[in-house]
Amino acid sequence: MLRISLFLLMLLFGAWPAGSALGAAPASSTGTSPPPGLEEEGVYLLIDKSENRLTVIVNGRAAYSFAVATGRTKSLTPTGTFHIVTKIVKPWYVRKQIPGGDPRNPLGTRWMGINVPGSGGYQYGIHGTNRPYSIGSNASSGCVRMHNRDVEWLYRHIPLGTAVIIRD
Image (cartoon, rainbow, N blue to C red; front, side, top):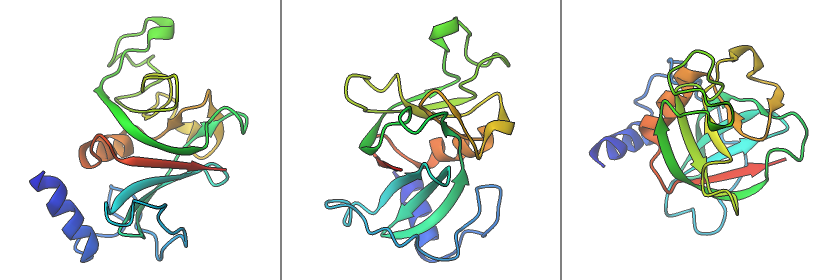
């Protein structure tokens, strides 16, 4: 909890170095106002499928932004407001029985599952990849892919329960 509080204070007061390995700090807010109920919570993730970009929003302002890959077709990545309900280090890729940590594993080094109805947090998520060249494009089966270094940073700093807004 102390780590998250310090992180938020550093973001709010601009003490974090812009352009560090943590992702580029956007120059200004995305113009997206927080959805009802999130104004007081302070932190949420905004995923824009049209730009293939994940932005960390802190108190209504864009704090960090990362390139991502989303669904090959518009309908594959669900839209709406969800929450992070699972977090897994070195996730196992069950569909093809590939263990976590294996270089063939398409889920990369971290998994942050979101509660899309009927999925239990294990079908749709934000995860790393073994195909870094796909980042910035529409390439996934519905999940949100990130560079492993970026999803590892997100995993460390974004807790369970954080809201995730996915829009077209």
